[in-house]
Length: 284
Length: 119
Image 1 (cartoon, rainbow over the protein chains, first blue to last red):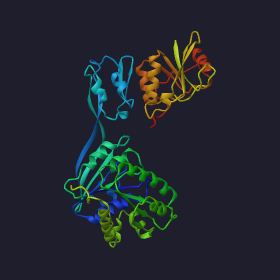
Image 2 (image 1 turned 90 degrees about the vertical axis):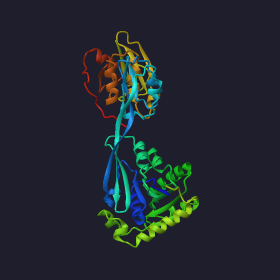
Image 3 (image 1 turned 60 degrees about the vertical axis):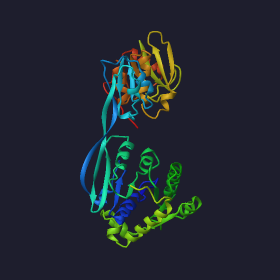
Image 4 (image 1 turned 180 degrees about the vertical axis):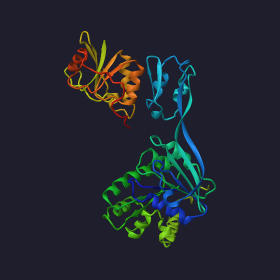
């Protein structure tokens, strides 16, 4: 079973839900922090990192001795990572999306594979809980290849919890794709609702069943609840705006550690999700 | 000599557009005759990324030797430099005024980009 935790709006409690759900399930579970631009699940889990792997992507390298300046590589590039001035090809590696088109079309074999570092993937564990995260290189703009790499790091865990980035753009889609269930975390505010709607639409396109957690459930208004009803989106949990939770959070302490009674709430949340996934999830 | 000037309109009376890659028009002006060609840059205006690179390639292909503009980012600068062009940045006024000022020798060539790249 693969569950992605997503939101739309940032700061609604994705990491809180992901870490507490993973800790409550414990053995046989692996948390993948796919919010590679700012992975923060480690702040609550303090995992022991045992493996570090550099992740890079393919970029073109031009052999000026073979290049005739025919422009075919620049013409096929949709991201304008290559241009030809005079007879010389200029490469802008940060714009390259690694499609390999330039290498394919070059009649002279002058374009070969180089590398651009995207970031690192770190794996380890937190007690019996498996853990992996990606960390995007500072200055790098393209995160999906790193996210996909982190996603593959499932080892032998039977339950995978993916902490997705906020928003609805490519990194989020990359993180959610292939999940059995998307758990949306929102807050009952106009901003929370606005961005939740965008996320719900994105998940619909992917065709993944989803449910909702309302965090800080006792602030704001009831428009999120009304929207969920209208959409047929099940509300699976409500987390109150509780000073004790906020205090634990600010010290990097998971809710289930500060208030162990929450462990059962997260376990029954998982039980409810299992019932909403038609096949019971993919076997790992 | 041909100079490229970023412009908000299609003739010499148009104001210089401070942006290079995303200027709506780029005028290629012959400094001897003041004849000019107006290039429609709308494709680059709406480009997701790489507008400066494409604009730079376009003006280099037209044979311009100097670029007069407001701001030139790092990728655009690298491209015009590779093409052997010189850049005069922080240019303002009309295209005609900019070219006249350039002809009077009242300009400094940039040796660097004068703005950050943007995403």
